[in-house]
Image (tube, rainbow, N blue to C red; front, side, top):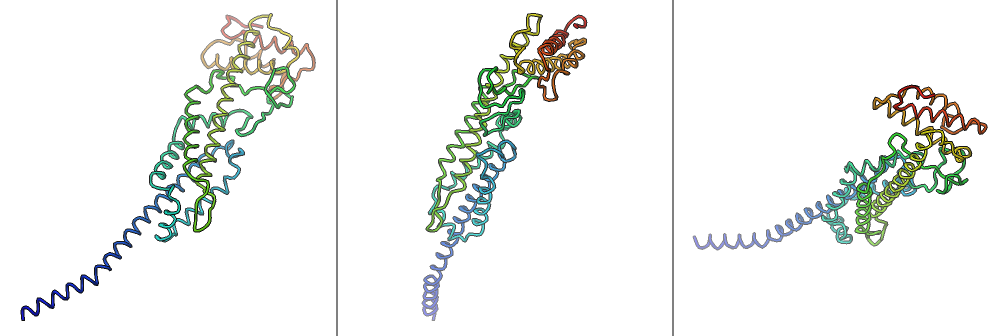
Length: 343
């Protein structure tokens, strides 16, 4: 009896083992597929989220948003959103197949994209450089031409001041020495290289089923690298303008010291008179802020301003007016720190 029970139990255990083992194996396999697929899903979603955030970050700046390199921003962003929604709704089997076909997007790539995107979007120095470029006068990033803000002449190239095609520089009259340093240019150049490298890591196309389609991740980083390149070019232009402006300022201030400053070029070129007006105005403002006496400098500046329009362009009708404007500006400048009013 006992032996019969033991044999029956043994037979039952063997039968259960044979029947249940495949079930356990199947469940474990399915569990592994689901777990692996969810990891793939998380990596894909993280990449699409970070690339979208990077694109949106650059679009917040108007001059960048209006540049040629960002012209396809709405379309690319929509594609990223569509791909993200598609990944969310994929089955584990579809995700596994997609991961197999697109082995470039792995956890390491997702980590690199996440780190790079967040560093670019949160780096205070790089943001300061973009904002500096954003504030650059009439010049917008991505455009090769500048408007002639200080003269009435149309501009299309940088050259000699007296040339008909001369384009005036964008000068910071309040702080002439405020221009990008070598460190600033090094940072913008480093960001450019990192974004180009990320664009190279992501292939231009990826496989979905039996079809090759454009890779929005590659497109985003190519756009971002283009934006960084524009920022880098603009910073170099700002630096060149600032150095150029400082040289002109030194010349103008030298001509404001005494009567020998009335040169021929002041008699036939509006640019120098406009530059002189802005320089004297900034100098008086700085002196007032620093507590330096300006005597009747403000009154002389007001009198000189009558020879200029609202955009600081000289509107005097003859050479005598040029002489009068120059002398009033010279008197305003010489009042800074003087013992009494300089007429």
